[in-house]
Length: 110
Image 1 (cartoon, helix red, strand yellow):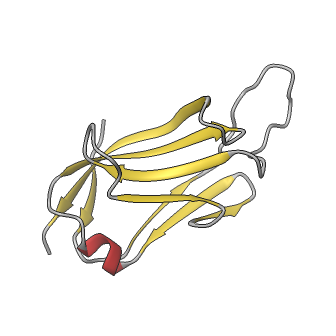
Image 2 (cartoon, helix red, strand yellow):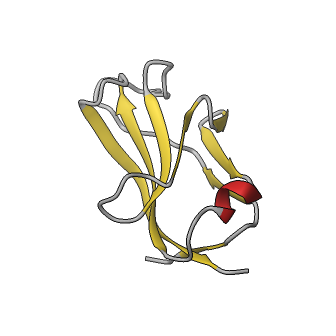
């Protein structure tokens, strides 16, 4: 797995293109208002240091999603190895939560 590198104190953005989830019986599935899409940066087995959700902190264009972190947000991250994830919670009730993206993220000093 290729590790993503983030420089501490610099703005950072990431895009998730063409998110489609095959669900039996549904030919054109899209994320609905009742679903919760969450982007998080956390150390393993710890609560997230940064967390953004759709629609408040994640932007959408069609079936692609974009996360923007400010320089101030990344400056608060210690130089460590993190887990960067994008998850979906169908219906937003915490019962059907699936990981769509899972990558290592290394924060390095400026």
